[in-house]
View (spheres, rainbow, N blue to C red):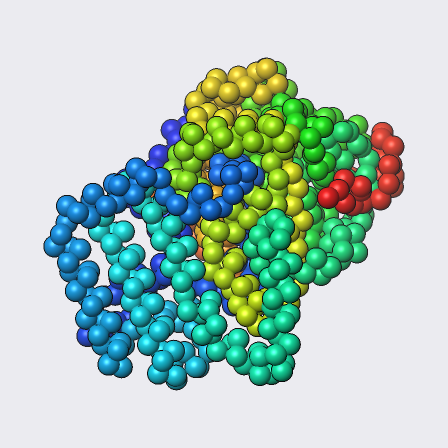
Length: 606
């Protein structure tokens, strides 16, 4: 029986706001007379392969906001929230009057051509010179920015609690972004494209709009469906399938070094989208990098469930990881396995580790890594704020009747979490300009959605709504009450500083729930770009500190910035826990039968 470690004091959120405010979509702008301007809408990114712009559709597999109900419901705040907003502002007539007077004065200056309101330098929506050079377009742009600034400040002035604030700010951001003049026929890019193509761009744009909006997800395409081919451009690290069940296939990658580490690494991907987020194009593949350093690497490839698999829940997937561990042990002869889990795969893995501890089998795990994984949902950002029990019950019932949650519908909802990045810049590029979106591997992976079994959807929502993993015994895995403090293996926890789906502070609290020693890494970028972070990226940095105190802000104050990717750091950390160097195996099957070449068959299920 493993020894139970003392339970760490979980870091709890305080009433102050941190980076969550940035998710509301605000940046600084400049106004006249050197006054501090109200916050302006978040800048849009240029159409094309921007890693951070990909984040919202990568899938926070912990489905707290359910795509089954559609995105329009989420754009309208609950009546109680709206009432609180109105009541709070009604109690501050002086503040409201001040904001109204500011806006009236600024609109007057704009009309006279005397306003100095400018978009943020990062706001590429208005980068075309016509927005500043044409008197009419400049006035329209300035009026939009001034109005958006005033609206954002009114939300600040209302002094709402964090959930109401996030809900109102989310609605406001979507409304402001939608009404931007850059999304209308006023956009000079539209007319330049029409002139340059003799009107063909308009025809192409209409065709693209019709094609996108007739089926889910009803948002502009972010990548062409034939931009890449799995098995040819993506998921090409050499390997074989050595084990298969109804739930998953197990891929073993071919070693590229004469010596390998004795303890193998099993990777547990998310349960929405395909596994190859960890095996993208050569040079950008996590699995490829790990293999090149001498690790024995295995990968779970989840099956795309349908209505036949409606009952698959947390126990099904926990047993699948346990089965995969057994297969890895038989294939390598090792009695221990290291685990690296991503997002929702991390939730399943953490619960399974608690089960193993209760069974006296945690010594089968040499080390564990959790990437962009939230185990404590106290104030987990915009997604958490949008939850309410009635909507959750309705969504769960819909997925129960259907047998699954449709990944395409979920992608549509996530797109509206970052409308400028994931809707409106592609609206301009695809429809107004009639251009195809740029080919980008992460966005292609985003679009390659999978379904989530109704049982897993139900279980995830139950765990999150009750924040069950923070209370020992509140939820079970394979019949065993879960107590994460009993998981006393060493852990490596990563998060992205710009991750709006799994805020880094929420990921950090994983270090406080688990019982062992943790190394926490805060990477640049967001949810997925923090993972797909190869050493060849010259802009990569990460932050690390020598300890993990309860308060994430205290950790941040002590952290040092390291230039480069966290991948080599993780390999060094894992090497210390992976046993001796042994000759690379000649046969990849080991004690298992080779069933075919990677990437296997389940990855092609649509």
